[in-house]
Image (cartoon, rainbow, N blue to C red; front, top):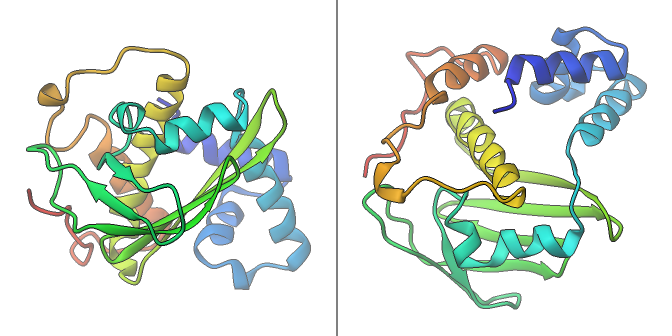
Length: 204
């Protein structure tokens, strides 16, 4: 698993800024000079590199069998804008109502509703490699650390899945994956969310 603190330091080193500046670029971008923000964003992009072709990553983002390897709520979708996104019920995942495909441009852009939120996946690159960017749009700022920790672990799992590593059986996955609590605490500090005010994980 990529360590979040190491990643923060890597971005800071690439951009030539402090770790606190990288944190501000994520949580308070309006407080930075535009040139500084641009350098930090470029450094983040360079670390979102995936050594697989966009078409290969697109399959992992859209195939139910592959989603089961890494996505917190695997689904089936109708491959068109306005199509249904049907989340599969599981004892290990919260129930999510049917969603809708909001953007569908294979193999470059996928967006869909996820409960009250929106997930947007963008791929940029050529036949041999690409960068993958996830944008999670939501209203509840106090759940930012919780969800950032979750996506951190899920994207690590996506990387392992693309590399062909075997996944654990769904029934053996704990309620909160190993490492989530540490990452949640890190992101609470990074996003300046008091632990007592943070939105807890959804109940099953």
